[in-house]
Length: 179
Image (cartoon, rainbow, N blue to C red; front, side):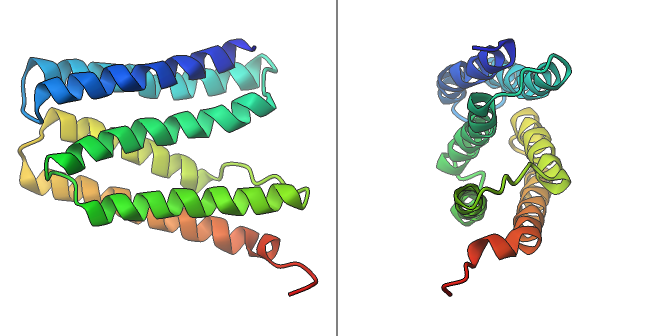
């Protein structure tokens, strides 16, 4: 197993710890929320670190290509689910995020079946970064309503934009000669 993949696994291992700390915070500002934020930031930074190591040390692997985006999705969805549970992130917004993730994953699976690899696009990377930063803002200022709605808007806009872009750029993968 590569160093990059080990770092990605560390990100996955942080998720239960993060969720436990978030539960202890009860969605309220205070020590547990700050510790949750710290764990989330460290976990989020491993996304950059494992990618950098994989590219610079020639450690790109099929396992890493599978695990890295999965780890990102699990971390982000864990956070959004906690905020949704506390009524701080609307379920409809979480559903938009989940729909985009399932749709893009499905598109990638169809493409792989046709021998096409759909690499992460620029807009997907922006979406991931904006979402992770936005969730950090929510953990930092959970009771500031206007800021919460700004974060939700940014998450939704970047999520929808990147999802639409993936489908526009790769639409041909969904059709075969039999359709």
